[in-house]
Image (cartoon, rainbow, N blue to C red; front, side, top):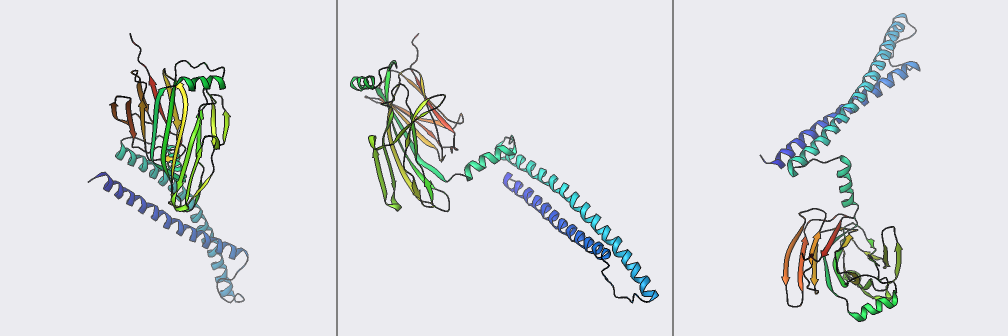
Length: 343
């Protein structure tokens, strides 16, 4: 018998127990209501039985039935209250059994135990609270020595520029954004880039979005992009205020960006997080410096980032990594590079 069949059988038995508890709870409520009816009726002298109360026999019979109704009413109320109280205790116990069953199910299937119920709730909420899912996500980093004319331009715009051994990093991204809700949603593209030591150079150069069913095909270039400087404790970023776009249910939007920045040729890290539920990502590095740099790409789990290839070409060296696992909102990826020290 395989694991899934075993879990299904346990799930059915558990559901049968819960259904049985619900039926018993209904009976206790009926008893409680009947008891209240009898007690209240006796207190307010409601005549349940039609005996002649003016005769001695009828009067005695009425007293007996009135006492009987009072006692039965009290008994029904006690049984109903105790039954519901005990049933609630039993229900809590059943919920504990259900939670334990879920933990055992995960352990049987995946070989690990859920740390807490909150852990599972957080992951599930991140998935079901997402309005969009990102697919076909590609990022290409092209790294080259920075031309002298651009370096001179940066120094003119920023006299305090002191970055040793600077390199030029060009970043191209493309992805498809799909509305996974049953109704239209506003998609607000977000883009920010670290200012580092070259605030007048590190910027978004191009942004394009295409939504075929809405006949939207818009491109923004350089000076058309509205930028705001965001200051945090750790860094200063250039954040771009891009327009919002309405994407209908199951509709897709194709997004492309191009940006460039100055980075150090020595050991450094390019780190970014995703704000959307994403179906993997492919990262490519084109190294035009060709000075033996080592590139390392890391993701949210040790085995999720798979290196596809190293291609040593005449003009550059190409590296490629693919992450096939889903990325939850606020999970990140880092790209590190450094030049080995010659001993």
